[in-house]
Length: 109
Image (spheres, rainbow, N blue to C red):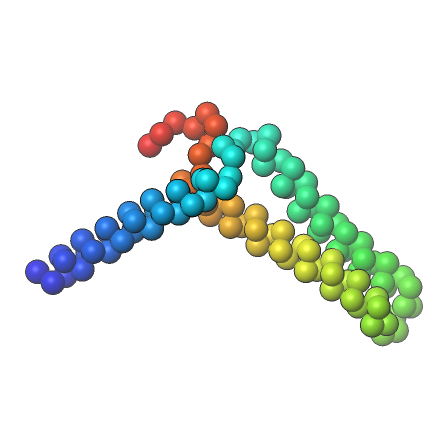
């Protein structure tokens, strides 16, 4: 009997989590479609390119020697930007997968 109670509690908690996440996230995100997601993909790709480009610039300017603190800070800034954008994009993907945001043209389940 306790196991059934625990399962019921977990199911209710899961539904509550879904409802709360949908309400909170959906209020902060316009209805999505592919056209609204493409700029995000472009932004992440450009950030990745800038990060790699900074590394290549660094390797060309140092001739294999250790980079300066200023050069390392510039590389670090590019990495931080890239990693933040990737993390945010992954969070958006999870929100889409779990149905926390409305998709324009999607059929309700």
